[in-house]
Image (cartoon, rainbow, N blue to C red; front, top):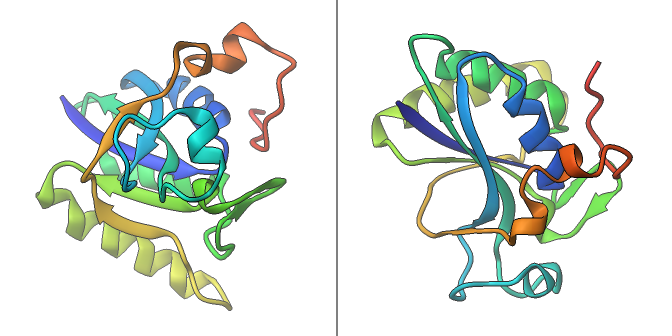
Length: 157
C-alpha cells in the first residue's frame, strides 16, 4: 500500500472525490505541515498556524498509480491560484502535494512540470515532503457523506 497527501481547498470535497476512485483504500482529512502541535479547525482557520487542509490517501498501486491520482488531482484544482480554491480563501486552502515516500518526488515533480506547460501563468501548487500531520476532528471525516447538501467546490459528475 502507498500513501499520498493532497491539499486542494476545502478538504471535504477532496476526500469525497478520491474516496470514489477504485484502488483508493482509505481517505482521511487532516492538517499538514504547520508550525503548531495538535491544531484545531478553528486554529487552522485563523491563518497563523501554516497548516493546510489535506486529504491523506492510502491506495493500492496495483489498482491505481500515483500518475493516475495526480492526473485526477490536477483536474479538481486550479494550480495557479495562491491560497485559494474557488470560494475557499486563506493559506489553509493552498494547493499542495505532500509525499511520504521520497521516491515519489520525481513522479510528482514531472507531473507538475507537465501541468506548467499547459498554463500561461505560474503553477503555485506546493510539492513538499509531509513533515507534520494531524487528523482533523471526527465531524470533518466523510463530511459530505454525512451532509450530502454541504458546500463543496468540486463537481462530482
